[in-house]
Image (cartoon, rainbow, N blue to C red; front, side, top):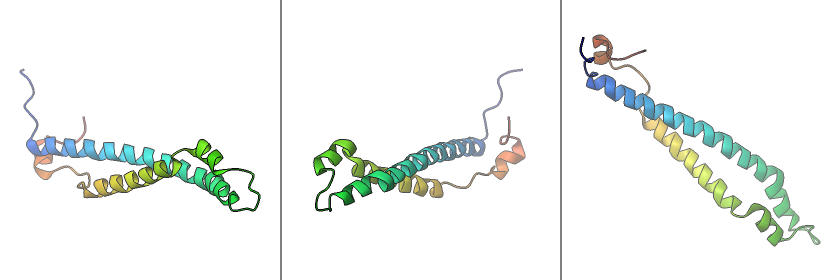
Length: 111
C-alpha cells in the first residue's frame, strides 16, 4: 500500500475555500466583539466627556481627554472599516459546499 492518491483538484479547491471562509469568519467574529466594545466605550465615556467640554465650567479638559483616549477615534474608524472589508470578503466567497465531482469521487467531505 503506497501513498494515498492526490486529492481531486475540485476537492483541493473546496478545502482552500473552506479554510478561507473559516479564517474570515474567525476574524469577523473577533473584530465584531472588539468593535462592539469600542462602541460601548464611546457611548459610555468618550461622548459624554466630549459633551462635558461644551459646559461653561467643564470638569475635564481637551488635554485630559487626549491623554485618556489618545487616538481612540482613529482606532474605532479603522475597526469599523475592517469590519466592512471582512464582511465584503466573506460575501464574495462561494458558499460552503462540496463540489459534485469531488463528492462523486470520494475526494470531499469528512475525515
